[in-house]
Length: 379
Image (cartoon, rainbow, N blue to C red; front, side):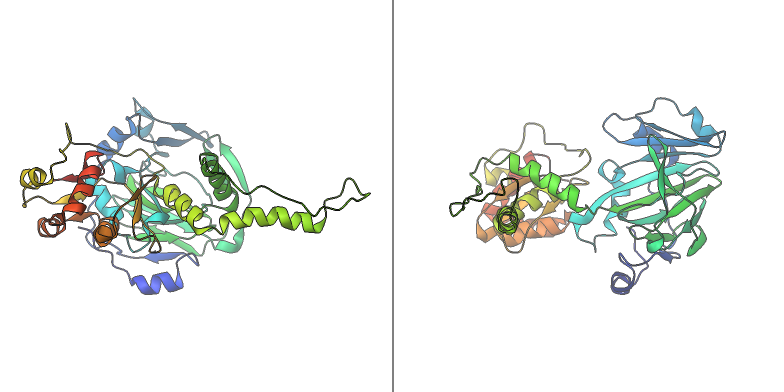
């Protein structure tokens, strides 16, 4: 189990989304959860997103996986990056869970990178928050302030870089050190010898992305929507004009839709519970039968319950009888709301905690449905 050496309240008040922070020995006596060979193995899988980045004759090169050979990684200046390892690698998932003090709807994934000497991805700007944890080896990092706004350009089809910037943090990370980088702060890091780094990213969409996804959601709804109406329209000679009152009317029918909490809760719950990466769902062979008593006897009270790695389970306090799991909405009786919210807020239940939960037959039957879908599993 990883223990974060950080004053969380101070960090959230003074640094989160505000300015970068170097956290020396953020994890004391840090031990890598994954090896270079395991990283390469994950990069070979079709369902896992990976990239290889290197420099050749001072030019940046990038290639997307999956990969079948790794000769490039035998040379200096190379890096291989694997997304969402928390979905596929249990020990790495434990590392990601350390940051559960930030709401899970904001969490994107845990990326791991293995680099040879001088390897990196070049200077760039991210639009989201990231914690970079140093594992094996060392890495030299430079981080700029958020208000620098360096010009960006395409260094390669799979790489976007930014121009040179002045650093407010210039340091070499050692195992267990953590670097927090807020949105828009330019940064670059290069391995000193071979190195492993872990990037814990938290998503943040802009207006265009949110509205685009909201539009896609609306297209899937079969209900009737409010149509623009102008029953008090007066004749006018200015045939080509759109009057201010008409602009307001069109705006109102759009904003009234976004002001409808029943619509927005359903959209946001489905949208932010859906994983951007594949999940390693493993449903029990044949599934558990619907007979609650038999299931309780079969799993035994020495079992514990674990949520599948990377699964997002969300709820709204204003909607206590609903939750959202991997893009789907589930409605249930108010009597089991507290137990369902406990599942949403935790990654596992001990044998004793599971025994208490399973005493409620209605909750147990709902849980069995989710176990049969592969969302939770008994061990």
